[in-house]
Every structure is written in C-alpha cells, then in structure tokens.
Length: 561
Image (tube, rainbow, N blue to C red; front, top):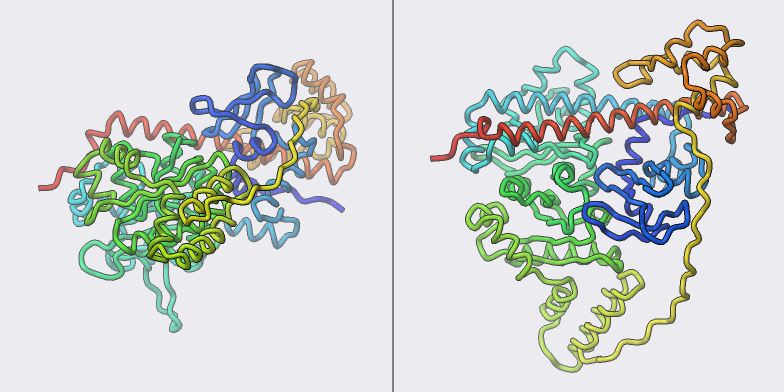
C-alpha cells in the first residue's frame, strides 16, 4: 500500500501544539540557564552540560557532539523513529490523527484556505481602522499608542456589511466567512457582518496564525465584547489572547500573568509588561492551563477583588490543580476595589504592578485555605472536619509528588488534623544511560539517496510548489532532463563528494520501496519548506517589531484631551 505524504499544514499544527522543552524534559532533566535550558547531552558521555534547548526558536543543540534539531528530530535521534513515526507520536500526544485518506487531506486543504481568508479579513480590519476617525478617537481615548496597535494588529469593523462588500464577487470566500462565523446567514438567506462598529483584536496561536477575533463595541450597544464563534480554526477554550505577542519578547518567561480582557493585555504590554495573556472573559479550561504551563512554570492569575473575581479565581484554581506538578507554581492576585489591570497600570505604572505581584499575590495553597474558610465559616470540630474532607478531595487532584504532600500537610495543620498520612515510598528511578546517537542524514542527502534509487521521483523534487518562494535549489534544478542512468555521475559534478558518498551509502527503513520512498521524499520536502517558512516568518515578525520600536514615536496616536 502506498503511503500518503503528511501535509505541511498538519505538521505546522502538530508543532504548534508541542512544546520542545516539555518534550525533552520528560526524557532528559533540564535546568534553566538564562533564556535557555541545559542538560548533559543524552547522545554522548559528558560531565558538564553542553546540551541546550532554545524555547524561543524551538530547537536544541549540543556543543559537544553537534546534535541539533527540533521536536521531530529529537524523537528521531533519541527514540530512533523515522520522520513519519515522530510526527505520529507528536500528533497522538496532541490528540490528533495523522491524515491518511483523501478526505483527511481535503479537510486540511480547506483549513489552509480558511487561514488565508482570515488573514485577508484581518488586513481589511486594519485598513478600516486607518480610515475611520471614530475608531482612532476611541483608541486615543484609551491611550493606546500606534506602536502597540501595530504589535497586536488591532483593527476596526465599521458599521454596515463591509466584509460582504469586499468579498461580494468571491463565492468561495463568502462560504468560508460564513463557516468562520464572520458573516451570518439567516434562515431566509439574508446575510450580514457579525462584527460591526467594533475595535477588532485578532486572536493568534503561538505560531502567529490568526484563529479568530474579539470585538469591542465603539459607542453604545450590547454586548460590549463579542468573540468569534466556534469554528474549524477557533475553539475558545483552547486559546488565550496575546500568547504570540508575548512570545516575541520571551518564549519562556519566569512567570506568566493571566488577566481577563483584551485591553488589559494591550495596556500592560504597552507599559513594558509583556509576559501577559488573557482568557478572554471565560472560565479557564484544562487545555488553556496546559498551554500556559508549556510557556512558563509560574502562573499568576489576576482578578478583580470583588465576589465575581474570587469565584473566577476559584474556577481557575480547580482547573490548574491537576497540572500543578513539582517545579511549577500557581499564584493569585486580587486588585484593589474599582481597579482592573488596564486602569491600574495607567494610574500606577509598571513598577507598581510588579510590586503588587511580589508582595500581595497569594500562593495557591493560601488561596485554597481562604476558599475553604469562606465555604465553611467557623472553627467548630464538625466544621473543621468538613473543611478537612473537602480540602483533601481538592488536594487529591494534585499530581503525586512533594507538592501534593506539602499541600496536604498545610491543610491538616489548618484544620487541626495536624498529621498527614505518610505517602508510600516511591521507587528510586535509575539514572538514565546516555544513548548512542544514531546516524542522522541531512535533508538534501536524504533526497539524493532516494533519487539515486528511484530516479522516477525527480519530478517531485523539481516541482517549484514544494520549495519556499518556488525556488528550486540549483543542485536539484540542474538534474532536470539528465539521463537517469548517469544520475550518480551528474550528482558528483553538482554536489560535493562527501554529500554524494553519504547519499550512496545512505540506508534507512523504506528506502528501497518505491511507495515508502515517495512518502518519505514528500515528507522531507514539506519539512524543509516548513522550516524555511518558520525562519522567514519569525525573522519578519522580529524585523517588524524592531522597526516599530525604532520609529514608534512617528506612529503614535495623538494623546487624548
């Protein structure tokens, strides 16, 4: 049976849901070193760590033996998996299935089309912002600077049906907009824009792809905030606002501040607090907690100090407890009455926010005991017993480890039980033995090896669509039209001797089977294109941010009166 190649969009989605630091840490204990993480290399014997993992660029490198790569290559090297097997393992961990049928591929193609459409919609909203003074007046009144608006790609959806007008002559685009919920179609066939007279906040995943929008009404109207509905691209319980923008500054901050609203994130970032995201006004979900802990080991939830804020904090506590393993932290910050993060940072400044976090945020166990006292007020024996029972049930959701034992002891001391049951002794884990690094072939060597055995697959390599910007490398393009029987001779002219010899002796599972080799070839080409696109996209974002910072003064909105 011939295997189908894995589409680039699927690989992108898998990697977007994979955190390299967490993946490697499960196999090799990592320690933070500045912005990176270090360990003794798992691929060769050493006493001083020379193996580094870069969470920003999502790659690892050993300065001792030269091992280098991303999540896929780590599984290939460490667990001896082939490319497809590595993708399948990462996909399974992310709760995804590798596409195998034409239907699967059609779904992914449709999703890629939706991403293209939503990017065009965002460009439209940004253009509308520049053309509507009432929108600029609103942002000016909220003291949002031009550099900040550009960083978050803030736009504006004017009144009327401008999306319908812009895409009027594109039936496929209109269908996509209806599927995304950006255009609403009534039962009688009438259509209208979902977002009207709203400041638009694009919601991105951690790779920068737009998944949906949040809109804040300008002027009177309800609801004040409106989000994209659930769609193929957007699942509100899976995403947080501001994650991509915070990662541009630091992909693995020491702590991550979680607030509730879009403008809270925007204004905190404008005042220099970039390690901040928002749950978009909904109860924190299990998936959001997992994504947040993938970015930072310490989460600080910030809520209003009223009863509604404390109820929301309680829900966040219960969502986070199952993920609060040893080495992680969870804190809660309640703002003074009448304040939200937006107003507080504008009034008091960045330093005051940092000081408030340091001095007044509560450790999760302190907040948990407060909740118990509020739920069961009083100090009688029966009341304390109920507290102990309820608290023990809450603590049971913590992962096994020192954190759980210490928290249970704190609970018992608080309720008068005083002594926790001794946790069963855990078997001591044996030290890991370094694994011998398997032979790993560069992508170009792998491609040449396949072509030597299957010259009929050359047209796949010469297809401009599989290369970034359609530029086929010269070493491959000049093979076009060559006699397949003289392919080795021609390669020796176009490529260096070491590469050609490595391709000749390259031996891996499936290389001699035409169907398997074709699948591996297409996967490799897609992987190369994705890696090049990732590098280009990251560099473009960083260049744009640097330019905005340099010339930010010239793009600032005028100050409000």
